[in-house]
Length: 250
Image (cartoon, rainbow, N blue to C red):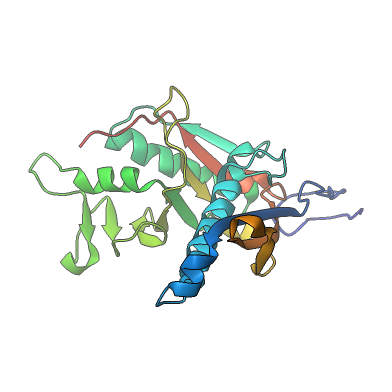
């Protein structure tokens, strides 16, 4: 595909690159259940198993979106995508972390020509930020109900997988599936990104019951599976990973 002029993101370009790194992958899970349990349980026990399998399916999707290797049937996750941005924290105290996040924000601005829209971190990092006090023993990250002034960040919710507050004007999302063993083995990354530049296609989760597979053992296989494709490679400059952090202490 060839085009001339400005590409709408502030960049002068004559050629648009075709992204071909988003193959369709399959995620599946299953559990063997004794027929006796299904026949004699006073509750619809298969519903319980299918709920657990669906939750495990969602966890695997999230893990692969973050860290998928792109091989062995996995999608290529954000952290494995070539050419994403990187900012090294100059220190592991609040000054180093805060400055690194601010640096990452401006890096997305200046390289993708559009603003980031979210900061993603592990819950332990967010918990550490909430534990910090200034020289007068006042917390730096305060609940929004306190109507804080001059706070380092705002706490809006107590959760582990959704928007929990904001920092530098951006919503903060915590995700416990972010790795905590990078770098020297204790590093957890912070991601500053423009999520709208990342694409995830998911088909509906399908469920099926296989009574014959282990029929000789009076066992029924309950299975879920689904298809997905993902790419952060359209605009890798829209993602900046903050590195150099170590396990926080409380």
